Image (cartoon, rainbow over all chains, first blue to last red; front, side, top):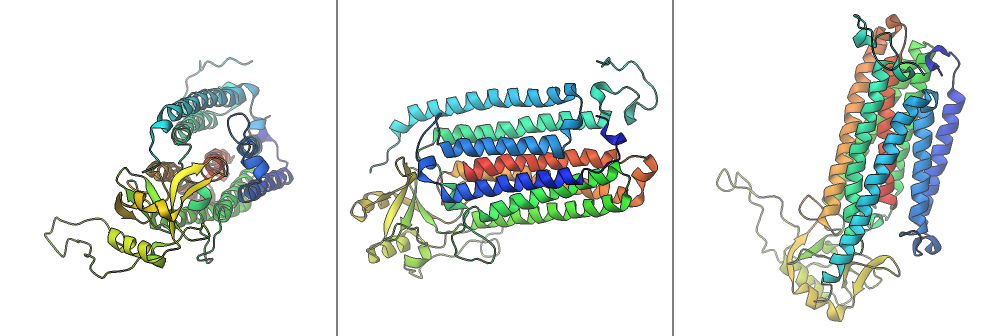
Length: 117
Length: 326
């Protein structure tokens, strides 16, 4: 609270968050290049486990950027909720509808696409 | 909770007034709500990308095969490394930005100036990297042919690796040159021609018996593009419409033109955000040097542009995931 009034330095925390973000990115890149068959070619919740891992890691990164770089942790609870809950709810709603719709169109369209000539 | 209705009107309203709804200053709160609406805009774009990707799930281009370049490592297959580097550049410029904000809280003008400068440089490097990425994507790497129904056919050697058109196409030296305004009527010109004609590619294909073709269709068992045996290749190649090299809004040698459209649009929109961020950072940087915020008594303006800059980084984290990883 009242961050502007504090005069203590948060440099230690900033470098720690940078370390966490870097490690996550490196893990993502390693997984993206290696693509282990057990994670890449199997299926869970409509996609591969690898994609789920990427999605979770991305959300973790988003959390660290918002909370510690954008200082969302220091805002009042009401502002935090007004911004974060609105975004999370609307984005999940939009993404769910669009992805379900995309799969449906694929189900209708794909059998009609000619691959043998 | 405090009342959130602004009841007071005085000359200080545009500077934030004396009411602080949600405990934040006017400017900071509005920056948060701008970021919220911009986040929804980007979600709309990425959601549309997801819709199209699911629609064409069995034939979407594989990002690892599209973005394989790295500076000074010509011809080497280096997927992901370059974009990982770009991600690091942006995360690092976010760190210098937050360090500038932190120094601002302690009223250290020198440190704020230094970290703002680093942030601007980081932003410019990122923009340059993105331009280079676009250049490679537009220029293409292997070249392909497009069939009459719009499908893309790529060429692979005996080991199943993609092969450049230059490696096998036989140049017949009969090709027409590109029409430019200085060669014909002043109002007539055309966009650049593909490097080879259909006949040259076909002659090369017939002369090299170890080459075969690859379809856009992804084999679900291995998640790789389907390779067609050479014996059946001619049935596809009889349908050739044109030779494609690189990508633009109409054609894309890597597969679906939609992939190129979304790539240009979303990374372009994000790049435009980075560009505006750099410009705003430069303005604030000069204000810091001039001592504007020192006289004002606080560095909140640095904090506000910082919010925008981190948001740009945040969007890149998602673009990185959805275009390159997933």
